[in-house]
Image 1 (tube, rainbow, N blue to C red):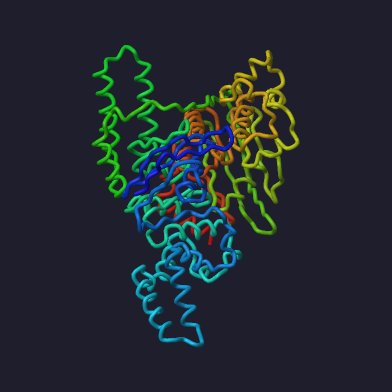
Image 2: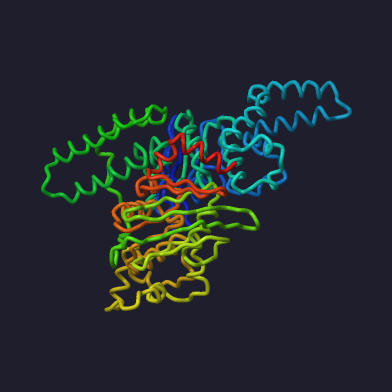
Length: 542
C-alpha cells in the first residue's frame, strides 16, 4: 500500500499540490490523468522519492519493493542489455555483486565462506538462481532478440533501449510499479504484450499515459490531478470520461427529476461493467463498479477545445495518384514500390515499422523533399492542410504574438479578418484573454500543436495530412481531435501511435515497407488480427 499524506509542493507562486491525501492499494492499476502541466509526472517522482515535497509524507508498506521506469536512455550505456534488466531488482543485484566479489578474493577466509553462504541463501530467496533466464525470457517477450542480450546498451538502437528499460522496471515482480508514458516508442505488438502483462498484474501499478486504449485495457481506477488535488475514481479512463460527461449534462438539465437522473447513472454503470473482459484487472474493475456509489460520479472541470474542420468545397473524383514511389535514407531503403489512388470518403491510416518511412512519405507528397523515384499527383480540387511531426520551422525565429502569427496563414480572399475573427480560432484552441499576446517563441510543445491546428482550421481544407497529431496534446485535446476526425467529411491521411484514434477514424490501412506495400480496406483492429496480413508483413520486412 502507498499513502500520500498532506503532500504539498509549490515552485514559487505556482502550486502543484496542496495537501493531497490519497492511498493506492494492492491489486489495482491507477491511471494518473490530468491536463498538461498539472503535475502527473511530478507526482510519480514524489512517490519514488526523486522529488521532496514542501510538506507531507509518502508511506509505503514495509518490505515492499518499488520499481520505476527509467526515462534516461543513456543511464546504462556501459552495461550489457541483460545486466541492465537484472539491475532493476536493486537488492538482488547488490547481493549478486557482493557474492561475486567474495568468490573472486584470493585470500578467501572461513568468515568469507559464512558470509557467502548467507548471501547465497538471500540470493535464492529473491529468485536469483533463475534471474538470468527470467530476464532473458522477459527481453524476448518484449521483442529484444537473444543476440542483443550480451551487447552494451550504448551499441543498441534507441527503440530497443526503451524495451530494455521497460523490462528492467517490471523484472522481478515489484510490489509497486511506477510507469511514466510506458508506450512511447513501442510498436503495437509490444504495447499489446504490455497490456496483457499489466491486465493480470497482482500488485500496485501507477501509470501516466496519453494512450486511452492502453489506459482502458489496464486500469481499474483513474487518479485525476486537478486544481492542486488528486481524486481517485473507480473504472478505467473511458468510464471516467463518459460518466463525468453524463454527470455534467445532468447537472445542466433542470427539467429531469432526481430519480430519473439516478436511474440513468445506474443504467450507465450496468452497461459499462457488462462489457468487461476476462483479465484479472477487468474482473477487479467490474467488481468495483458494481459497488460504486453513484454519488462518486462527478462532473469534470476539464475544458475541451473546439476542433472543427470545415471544407471550402468538396473534393472531386481525382484526389491523389501515387506511382511507384521509393525513398532511401543514408543508402537504406525505407519504402519502395508505393502505388495507390485515393477515393472519396477514405480516411487512410499509414503505418510502418520504421516511423521515418511515414514522415518521409508525407514530406514527399507535401513537396518538402524529393523521392528517389516515382511520381505523385494531386487533383485540381484538392486543398490540403498538413500537420507535420516536427513543426519547428513554423516557430523558429518567430517573435510574433499568437494573433500576428496566425494572421500570416489567413487564406487569400478571406474577408473580414479582424481581431475577433482570429480570436475565434485561437479561442477554439483554448487561447483566451491576454494569452493571445503570448510570443510564439516561448510556447510549449502542446501550445505549438494547438496553434498549428488553428492554422489548419483557417484553411478550410478538404484533405488533412496528420503526422502523429496527438503528440504533445493532453487527453482532452486528443478526444476533441479524435471526435472531429470521425465527423469530418473530407479525406484524411493519418499516422498515429494512438490506437483508439486510428481505429475509430480510419477505414483503409496502407503499410509502407522496404520491399513494397500492403493496402487493405479494413479497420486497424481488423488489420492487426488478419492472419494473411501478418504473413505478408513478415515477408516484406525480412
